[in-house]
Length: 280
Image (cartoon, rainbow, N blue to C red):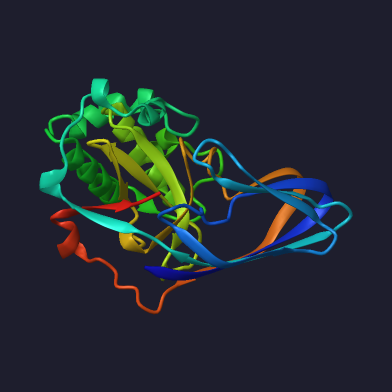
């Protein structure tokens, strides 16, 4: 599946600052990129470097003397999506879990699974299969948490979200991750571009490791699962934030688009018998 991605970010700079930016799509064997372009305000110095955790592609920018910062990014991305029959997904004990999934069992900054285990086991502990547990978690969040822009901020955690019963995609993902980890299911944060998402924006959801394979879940139901382009993964948003500011800057505008001429979204019928993997 091929997608055309465009992103623009605009900032007002009040003093010399450093910006860590994470908007580049990952370039992997299963996510191939072409015609990639990245431009910033002239005079602003920047460098790209990957982080070993997930190999996320960070950009570090030094605003220098600039008082306004304009950033544009565009790329064509081809993704590999695999549909796996529910019958082919099997339990794996912690003893047989792949080593790379182990870190995603533990609580993290925004995912306090140790504080939510009682609620998780009350609602989902009686479900036998881990895949069915994650589906139930996703459905529960969709039906019980209101999607409400502006209801949360960068300090909001999963515990806050389940208390306030409102949030945005980031908060929905953190809560799903926390419930999974409370049930001993490794789960990680996924941020990316979403085809034809309305309103257009960066999108967050989560992946759960079941049977030693990572499957994608979106409690917001705002985007088709086969229409996602991976930017980054991590324990939570602290590992995969779109932008982190060191200094004094303020965003004044943003636009994001992800479109495709041949994209066919998967409907509920396809998902009733199959799980979705977005190969990293």
